[in-house]
Image (cartoon, rainbow over all chains, first blue to last red; front, side):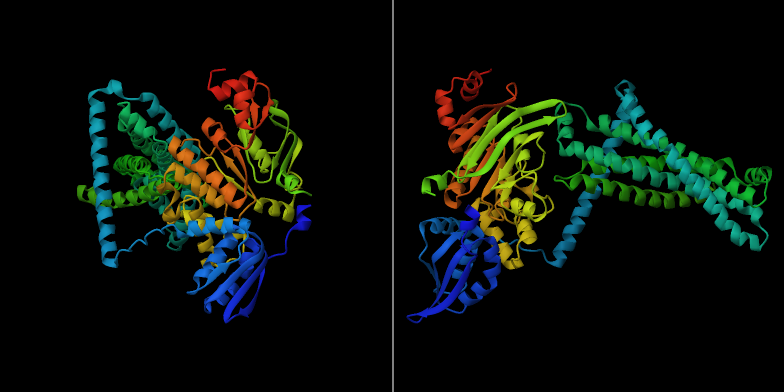
Length: 371
Length: 255
């Protein structure tokens, strides 16, 4: 059997021969033996002119050959001698491989240049973002002028995926949110005997702020990331390029239905979340001993229709932003296996940051308008 | 043992292999031997089970029946240390390269070295550079897989498969998707490595030019026959076979 005949693992001994150091190797210099010998052999060879005698080497693989050549190059005047034909073939092949020109080391940018590069790239990305919004607007206007071209089926599919399928999650989160808010605010208000105002507090927060914001977070996590992953995969597979070449506008076919779906489902999700939250709050109030009638009385005396409509309008704008950011991230996906993952992350992070920024803008605008 | 028998010593032995997906049988009762140092080609039309046969030999897909042994170890009964020792003695180049996209070519080649040897990081980098040099990719060492061409990806895949100097290399469709010049370059590389390093190659392909250029011996699988329809030197099969499918394959006729 071959296993019984296998030569022993490589080893070397050192002796002097007419003033020169001779490092005599024997056995089989394979990857394992090379790893074991590497530090000692290179250190011995680095001491000065040495002869690497490999006449008694039985077998050599490319890792072993790399070791021999590294040892040879460790000091000036080192030489290899005595290679048998089989060993010489591997050695020559690896010598040629290592002699090939190395890549030129890339010169790193100075810190100042790196800041400049980051700013430049940021500017380019911002320009692309504005161009994307412009293109989306033009496509939307064109579709309005020629409604027959609109892909209604696509829109319905996305309404289902972004909307109806998100209902259970939205109701669950809204209900829990209402329960938690009511419970947490009841504790401090009880000290003043003012638990009766819990519906006012929870109602106004849900209608004006938390409903649209939480629905936005749900949409960004569920749908924004899905848009980015779907469109990202399509652009990596050159499907988007294929559409362009066929004369089909990817904006009209892929982006518009998605963005529109995001914009249409958001008010619904927000309303659902708000109602579920109010139900959760009512349950806690019931446990605290306040009947349903009292709670409804508080809500109707304190909340106005403008609170609800303001929240829903805000939600629609959030949906537009999340849809557009998700599609933009997907269409702009780079190449390689990480591109789709990066696009999905960018869609979620960008979507959440955008809705919070927009929320601030709305707060100022509503205050100025006296809403 | 004489030199002649040592040369033809089998390193892979497949016995009565059957592959099936549920009730659908791809091939049955396939037996062959691969000898040390040869370039062994598995050929056949699309859907005949070439790639499945390869996966069965490297332990990825279990055979429905039969057994494969590599260097005396049964692929499907080896466990633990035996299995690891076996895996270290084979290398695989995947059809699309299967290089890790987040790592440079050099890091891709270093990975098995870091996992399975005690080489220092500096020595490891030097060894990985040598492997990339062997396939002619020295200058691309620092690039990511997404930044190189399809032919370079396959070369890098070979370099990574060579990382632990396995005596047997499996190549899945080395010429697929490459232009004739790049493909011929890859064929020359395979022959060069087989000659200079003595590596045994098992190549799955349907590229006629490549089969004739590199193949020492081959088996041809056929979907309709559900098995091997020809075995031997591909050049002799081209000139002498009387089997209609084999003749059609080598003459590029519609069957």
